[in-house]
Picture 1 (tube, rainbow, N blue to C red):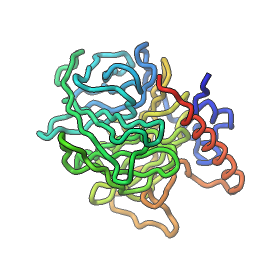
Picture 2: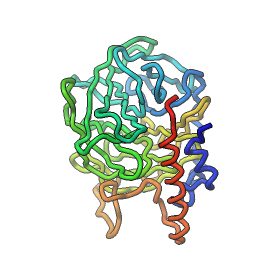
Picture 3: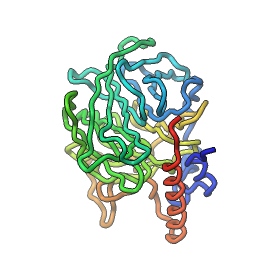
Picture 4: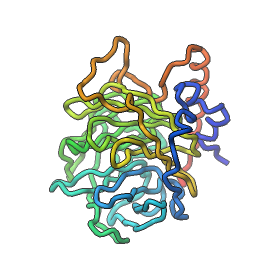
Length: 337
């Protein structure tokens, strides 16, 4: 039986706490279970996105090998509607975001960007459907956008859309993590080139832009980190680490509608979605703040799991090495469900 990465990390003593200094227990008194995903069809929730048209509704989807469907969850976690993406394939869906279409209407983007072989697929695909005005189960024809990385294929689980520019970003996974920007306007013919614009933390499993577009978050299995946004809309300097509660396999994150907290989900059946409030230092300042000497942002190698550094550097390094080895082993043997 394949041991899931998060369980291996739990056996290592919740490495996130050791490395970040603000690990899973950091918000124990503040975070709460927003709801529990109760639909038995949702077994591998790999993405979360808050609806723009329907207050209290959160969208999610399964990971891979299933039907091309998006589930609309109500405030109690029950399924209010199932949106089937006509003409789409669910090879390895790993993330989602709500943006706009070419006419400025709310739209749901689902990213088929997983590649467990680390480069086996010459291109990846992002599907878009309009967010329906009436929330009911239905089939909606999907628009497909094919994307290629400028520096070759790679595995990824993070897709983000800047709400100000509507530009799409993908963050790759494992060691050489990077954030890639898609063209300002996606085209349906040919391929859309993804160009590297920033570094990303290792083992990035999801991310999202804040509703106001002034900050973003990238999570890993161990924790999360928020970043400011540059004037051009790309990821900028690191703001703060954010402790996340222990989860079976934490692969999804998004902002609440008001941007004051994060929603963090996990793969597995009957999994809770946690609401984690953000502290002031995790939010952008009113004016761009100068970067302190030696401070690393996402574009300079900042790590989502750094947080406040432990004085025992050797111990932290050992824990990190063992954890990365566990995750790499997991990535090599993980089979598609």
